[in-house]
Image (tube, rainbow, N blue to C red; front, side, top):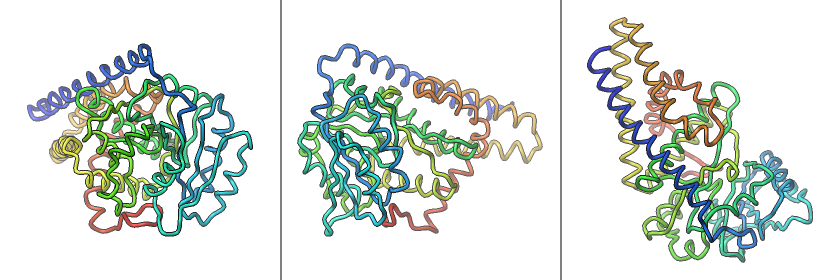
Length: 367
């Protein structure tokens, strides 16, 4: 191993220690908050908002998850964003004892952001929870929410599950982003949130939501809302407990995966969060340097050194992220890291080049 490789691995390890310390601090704080809190979320104070558009094929898992709950919130509102399929029929299969309602967006408005805000107008509780229409969760999901301390916003866990090697790579990419977000939150603040499982105080939303600044952008309500809350010094916390998690399948194809990631990057860029952009720069630089070192090893035909370099980098990453993946019970996903280490530079390059040639859309609407 030459000096350049050694220096890279040393700096990479130091960055990893920073992430690992952040994760351990977060887990300790999260446990303390849960045990010491006097004010917990109550289900009779909670309305669930589920915006959907043409999700008939995905609603079955969500509906079954709701029906098997040991406890239910005050109200579940499904907001139909001008669907053209039979999703409504799927929702109406819900047991009559479940406190749900389907409301339709007026013709003059459209989009997930508008759907959430329209649903909030119909809500009658102090707290709101947004879910995506393609998620599923354990039977104790709602009852477990009551163990959390009240805050202006709770970023709840969304766990992607992959089956084959390709989908496991998609899962790994998503979960590593969440691990870094969790680590940074304990040392600074969160920089991403997912509307697929996001709980927030209605009063804080009504006070600080700056919808007019981004209403023309089709997606991204979650990160914009997080940014609005943080600008106004609201209390925002990340929850990683598996009992509070929702589960969703990774995209099935490379094309759908890349479009999903490009959509997320696009909305992140439009938020203009300095912390997020700084972290993206550091990650991009590390991948660039790693790629250059790999190319040099290949050009010099130093294959044994190449394997050693990839192996050591993979071990560093497994050690860094193991606590988070253990927390969400997805440790086996880490086994794909050596392969991911090789693929990742090409993946990053693809994400940089693709926006030059394709139009990014969400639900058939341009972002």
